[in-house]
Structure formats: C-alpha cells, structure tokens
Length: 88
Image 1 (spheres, one colour):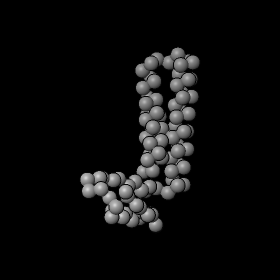
Image 2: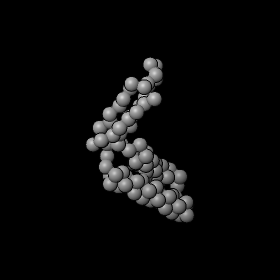
Image 3: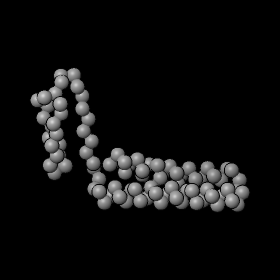
Image 4: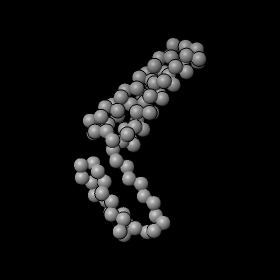
C-alpha cells in the first residue's frame, strides 16, 4: 500500500507498507488552477471556432482542400484540452 501526503506541492511517500515488486506513479500538477481554467476555456473556444468555420465552409460549398486548414484549430483544441486534463 502506498501512503502519500502532499504539502506545498511536494509529495512525501511512505514505502514502508509496499510490495517489493510494485511500481507507483505520482502525478503532480505543474500549473495553477487558474492556468488550467485558461487552457480549458481556450480549448473550448478553439473547438467552437473550428465547428463554426467548418459549418460555414459546408454551407458555402467551399472546396474540400480548404478544410485541411481546420486541422490547426482542432489540433490546438485537442492539445490544450489534454494539457488541462493531465494538469500539465
């Protein structure tokens, strides 16, 4: 069993009750909650922007090649979403 305590964002691990062959992973957020909220908002904004532009492109019957540029919007939305989710 792994017993961990967090104070001032520094983990203190007690391995006295551990199994010999067990491995553990500790994930500590390296950004503040305010910065995580910024990343979540940016992710949602980029995704909504991409969907709106895609809708306009479909409505205006723009050539399919131009839709490739939406990859940037959706990739940045996905990247910032996973940064928010993983607290990095």
